[in-house]
Length: 66
Image 1: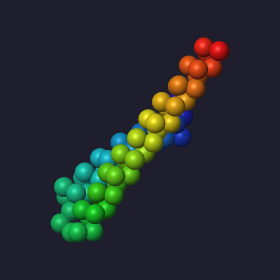
Image 2: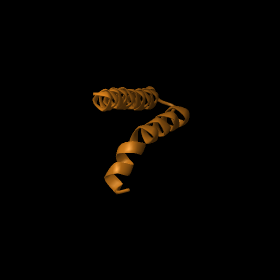
Image 3: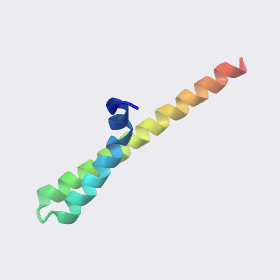
């Protein structure tokens, strides 16, 4: 597994962890907001990837049936 693939797969989880850490250890509004945005970005990326992989899997299954 090369570095690009590793980063692609693990980046949303890293974003989520960094967001949580930013919220926990920040005393400012900007830090909490940045942490929240990182968490929202991580959830969005995971959701989009899940949806794309689900539709791709359905396309493959339809192609196999034909």
